[in-house]
Length: 111
Length: 115
Image (tube, rainbow over all chains, first blue to last red):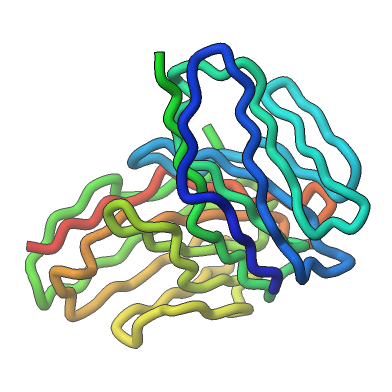
């Protein structure tokens, strides 16, 4: 199972773009990269998922280089409500695979 | 609303006691995962079931056990409780068929306090 490494914390200001990079050097061919957001005392919430290149949805973009050994979650124009812990998860989600979360990145958005 | 339902939302019990946490997965999902999150800690994978069978095991204590029933709901049993078992317990579900699109969805958790 691919292990992930993320920065422990990041600070930003309202209106700025936040980029969080996750390293996953031993990602497998069938693995997808999924990012989750977690607020205190709440369950993690799906943000975005991708396999390669770039994926964009209404809340974020995910950039994955050709070697897929890392990925970057981009949050455009953050607001105070984006303060949360962000987790990068790598796996194919098939039954039998332990979906193990790393430590996550604690993002603090300041006014 | 993720579609994953967990009960109870909050539970306070004494050391040495036994509790059961219940999870109903999203409609159609066959995989259920259990995670433990202690205060300011990350998500610790405990165990996974797929269509009634145990498929993956994490750092789950011997005092803990789980099962998934024919209707696909799951229960996590915690026995001989210790103060250190106080945590938020999450259940998550997925189709279990593998990516793409196989995202796991989390419930809101069951907050267990052992006193």
